[in-house]
Amino acid sequence: MKLDDIVISQAIVESFTKDLVDYLEVDVAIAGGGPAGMTAGYYLAKQGKKVVIFERKLSVGGGMWGGGMMYNKCVFQKASLPILDEVGVRYKEYREGYFIADSLETVSGLCFAAIKAGAKIFNLISVEDVMIRDEEKVTGLVLNWSAVGIAGLHVDPLTIRSKYVVDASGHAAEVAQIITRKIGKKLFTDTGEILEEKPMWAEVGEETIVKNTTEIYLNVYVAGMASNTVFGGPRMGPIFGGMLLSGRKVAELLLERLR
Image 1: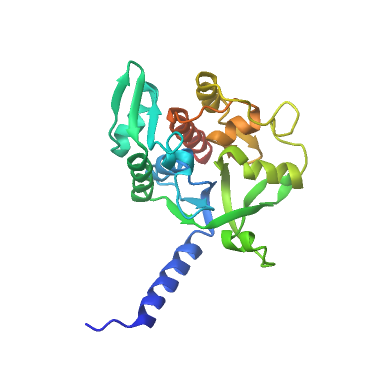
Image 2: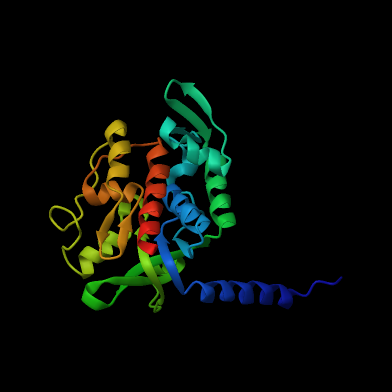
């Protein structure tokens, strides 16, 4: 069979466009395809919810690829192991209570599990605004190609509608930043503002990242490292159990709302 270059182009453009149109209205839109975002997407999609993840970078996985200082290993605590087991990621016990996994296998496993469960992931797309309606309730996201922002081009975005939004954008807490900048100091924190993450303290950071996984504004939830940024918890470095537990928790919270 002879290959036609135009047919190849048509296949890509038509199939991608169909996917994008299919996900203009969803149950949950997740900003950020790191470990928390993909875990949340996995558990939501597994229960039949229509969920989409937007990752601004070329690759999903956030900082997990590099492990700690480019040693591509990740540490997990016991409480998070059932999630690794469920998505088929292997690990070994390093010392009592400390489990080590290959970071590339972990990211790949989470990504594959989320997609196979039915979550849709779009990479190279950035969230640049939120869409609001009645009483300042967030009803969707405003999107653009990441390359447009990098190049500083004046190109208008597109919007998607979602029942709920999850800010899983990591240290930057990008959706929370947009809300406070454009809507005001109205987050569900003590001051209404982003409290900013504190210095490294793995033990406390791993606890607070799950505790801080909650609704932060009308229809907007936070998960992963963005949780500690919004509520002022410490960072925790290359231990990732809390990220997975946070992703699972936000999925559970949203499943309750979606029922």
